[in-house]
Length: 101
Image (cartoon, rainbow, N blue to C red; front, side):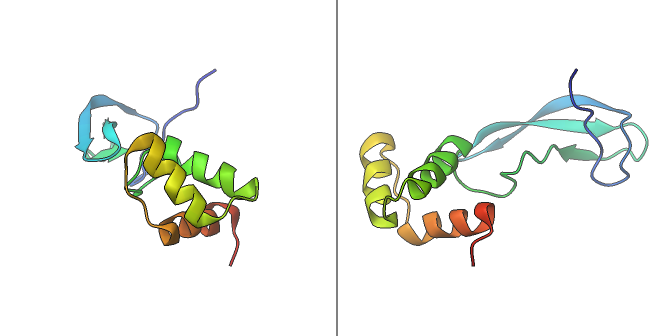
């Protein structure tokens, strides 16, 4: 059974898929159109407003939990994905997702 997608404006489930939103780093994101409030919205999958792919973020968090330093993680991500990410950004992801302060 699939999860019902609710409109973030009016909380209605009366919506349908309508096009994509194109982003620089995350690629295409499915847009939905609400028939009740007549507005577009995207489904929040937990990575809303993140500028990197969810795979990179989750891999970074996994490496952090496995006791790898943020600077070593940065080097690993640069080597494997050829994408520059700051070690501070990695620590911010961990703090946001895991609830560390």
